[in-house]
Length: 374
Image 1 (cartoon, rainbow, N blue to C red):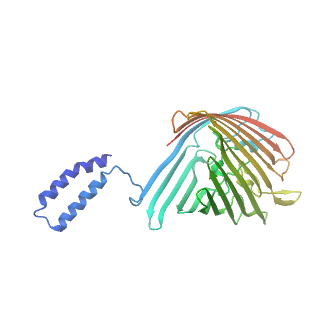
Image 2 (image 1 turned 135 degrees about the vertical axis):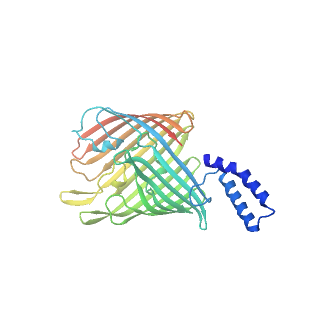
Image 3 (image 1 turned 90 degrees about the horizontal axis):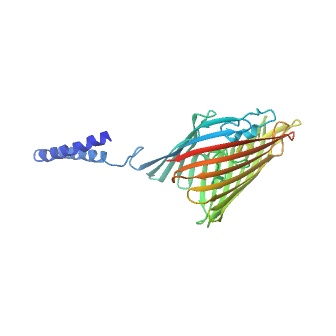
């Protein structure tokens, strides 16, 4: 603002100089003075342009989020990811932590070019290095129906992902960001088909191919996605596959449901809580078949108050005694929005892990969060 004020103060001086010299000045001098005034006038504009030219518009977005977490049974870590590591030997002690590492910062740009509108996105949060280090979440370029770069895998049903205060979310649903090249083809006004070639999650030397068909209209929608590729393990290559069926609907005034069902082989690295895509049992290595389901219900009493309940379940068919046989989670939430961009919430989270030797271990977490979007 100081620089802009300085330029505005100089505008009358420059105008007088141009008028006083008009009679004696050459055409070249007049042109030079006019150019200087145009530059000064452009400096006084209220628009702030980032990038190489005025054809680019940049939006800064994100949020600040503070979490206050109490583990009643054992320290689960920064998210409920810790449910997947519970054992009978886990310390039986309560724990409190407060953190702001989910806070997020992102940039979006739109540039008019000879090939059309080019859009970019760069976004990160502070979950890197176990928490506290800035890490990349999204970095992509979109031109028309093409997207190139890192974002949610096309296999993930992001439109029907249930909302929780807990950053990890429920068991039983795909969750991954992959570098990819994706093409989305509209199928009328209510449907689309997206196909992609992606960097595969887990251990692989080959790309993964995905396809997803979306349809939505009048308060409901459905999505069918498929994944195919390979997994490398101990010098062997295994063909992986996966299918996800998801959807959502408005049930009543203020009430909604979303659900997801996933099944596949060699896709554990795509699922919440991760896991091995291949396991060796009895000297034989083979793909792990994973199956998961997630159901979420929400009810908004008003624009300020709402409740949420999310159930998640996942099981693997190939496991050793210390591996996860199944994982079950429940998130029960209450939300308050004192303003349009602010959320204050309270959540109770329960998780139960069944190990390969049929040992069952559970834990309970309580989380309160305050978030402001900008």
